[in-house]
Length: 283
Image (tube, rainbow, N blue to C red; front, side, top):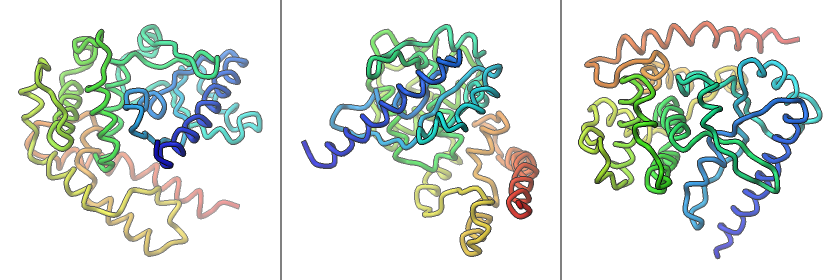
């Protein structure tokens, strides 16, 4: 075993202990979370392939979100690094109740950990990766391994046909990108031919993103770094067409991205200005 792999296993174990603690603490307040991404995605990776993660993504029901948010900002949860989600929001359109009903229980350090079903979690992984504009090529491996190492009982109908045709196409295209760039074997998949038919604009966008050394940062974090602020503003114009399409629930096969990009720019501008203003005028 290499030193890098040994170090990865130690770091992963420390995060597992934090995950277990987070579940115990939230349950002590009668809040039942679901773990997404991170550790849940790493379960699909081979044991000798590290999958690094730096925070703990927990989703809670919208009704529990205000109380959960207050709790994770308290001293009791200090140092756990929780990224709290109000339901699945834009990551999935199925109801929280249905997602919860189909969720699974795994175990970490003697603690029951709730994760989404394999089918539901796969949709979340795909939409999350696309919503980042396809910028993180290394995270495309999450999609690769989720397909390559899916459990025998994995049901593509349950995965793809419980969302709109629009979202189904997003997910098939994400699989197609893993096939094109990571050589994911899609032979035998019922939608293999469709997955190979990727829109030209999608291919151009991911390849452009992978050549760029600029990653999006919140503008309010760059206010004391003028050069970086300018780079970040330039990065946003025009908006990433993948991210814009996802944000406005757009069609991948439409001929133009312009409407989606304009809509997304308008949608993001007001919250961004508010965050910047709050930083500038913070006492």
